[in-house]
Amino acid sequence: MAEIIQQSGTWTFDGGTVRIVPGHHKSVHRLRRLLGELAVPLEAVAGISYERGRKSGWLRLRLRHGADPLLQAAGGRLPEAADPYRLEVEPGRSGVADYLVEEVRNALLLEQVPTEEPCDHYLLPGPSVPLSVQGTDGTASFDGERVRLEWNWMAESSKSSAGPRAFALHDLESVEWSPAIGLENGYLRFRPKGAHPALKPDHDPNCLVLWGVRQAKDVSSVLLAAAVVARLPHPSAVFPSAVSEAGEALPADESAPPALTKGEPKTPAASDTDHDVLLRRLRELGELRRDGILTDEEFTAAKQAVLRRF
Image 1: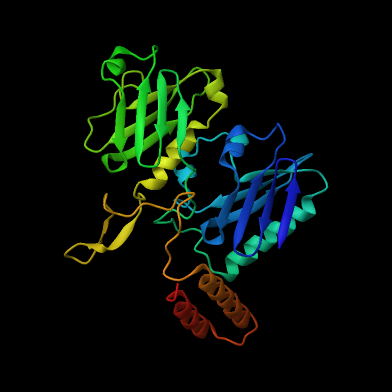
Image 2: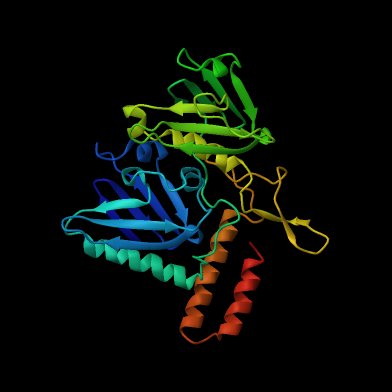
């Protein structure tokens, strides 16, 4: 097992999972503290690197596109301080960081993880619910099944006259999040299916405005967006039943099952114990191929047989 313990957090790798625990120091961004511990399965990892600086360095974990609903909702707009996949490495700990990087990279090669292929389903759970966000002109909340918007005295008449809004998950097409940056307002917008083109955030009754210095520093509103995203069909999902007459796979629709979220049980075909046995078998096969006991063809055939049992 590889582990690095720093003031800003702890990363541990056991061969199959990168476990990320945020630190308790005041310098740790509030979003990382609210998000809590993350268990990143190896199959969600696209790469890992250690970047040396003049004083401290940085560990960075890169995830496959579409693996994490938080990154999907953020769309690359998270500030670096809020990035849960970035860890500051204190001086003198570069050797430990290098070892962890080497262990993860070796595991990616051994398990033949398709690091450059996008995912067609979420491999990480969404944030826990219920969640509530206080915006400039109202409040948004999500209980896992329904989104609610309620307005305050600062809301424009187009919103207050429409009254509170409520959306069931199956009525939503998507959710958009944009942080407040400088003098530019942020927003949290919910797009119902079949809705007309969106209005400006101030006047859109499906949109909560995020404005001000406090909200510019606190981007925890993205957690609510990620919680909704995790429960909507994955944008790249393809299901075997959705096949055209020409035999081509069609995009998933609203009938597609949502991704797993924190606190919801998994429903695999086999038990967790069986999965552990199968994972150990895969590692054994990789070692046999590495030692020259199995040919590439034999390894591929044996691996496919094991994967079919998952």
